Length: 396
Image 1 (tube, rainbow, N blue to C red):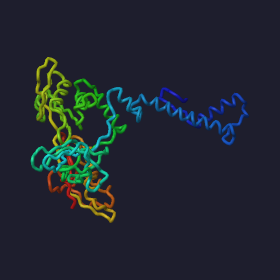
Image 2: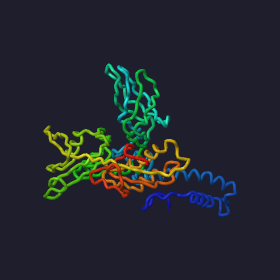
Image 3: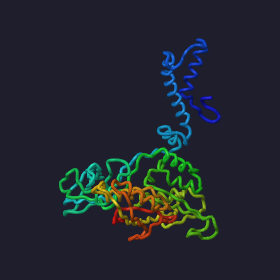
Image 4: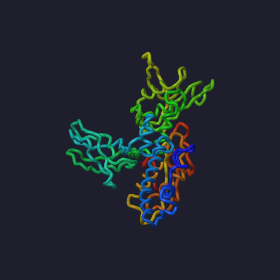
């Protein structure tokens, strides 16, 4: 039986539609009525049946539009939006520390373009205007955003080509690797974010506090939040530095903190149960409904730089900027690491093989300290996240 059944929606297939149409015609015109594919009527039936089959597919998609596990694309976007979760748009990579060499009084206008030294198609736009107010040449730092969206890499020292000549602007470079942008949320990511934000939002459970701290749709100030973990101590004694009957919000708002301390404090205060203490190495001020101020403790994730020594076996296909491409591949491989995630050595090592001309990686050593000698997976700890930067990757 096709249609809505106790087991869900059952779509009528093209073959079933053709059989059904033929049976109906024979019921009217007689059992000898020929609807085989080589007859004119059979070919006419096939034309209409194809259109009916497309309509059944539309009905199936509409039916699944009410199921977050089955809805896709636009229907999933609309469904998630009903409960306040928006599909995040793609963003461009960010050069947070772009240094401009400016003569006295020189001004670089907003949107002035800088190109990658090895990839002229990769452009970053200055967030300006940026002016040197001094009476002498000076180095001024600013931000620049990639004009393309997605995780486009720009290693430290690679954004050096001034595309838009400006009087008094003599040189530029990025002091650190660009913070990778993101693609538009996939259906899988949107489903997970929806579940996270619906986890008893507004309650006092750990999942509810986490959901509130990730609720960027209702609080734009949280846009820089990467990850949150909420810990609790339900015992009557101090455990892992946490006081009895308390919680600790562990915040990851990027390699450079981007969310206000007071905003974090206010959300934790509003979400936690009354009388529950907070722990942490950072703090902010929250205000209760009576206008009284409260100091709320929380912690930010410990960032643990990963140092990598790698040797490559390459062929003639290895490009001139191959070493930089390998570094970019390693950084991209670790870009999605979250709080407490293991650094899987084999996963990182395999990333180098994605670069054209790399046929083997005979040496791959990594550690949280310089001059690494270990080859095993790295354990950052429950309160830490591994980070990756080109300055910490040595190609032997």
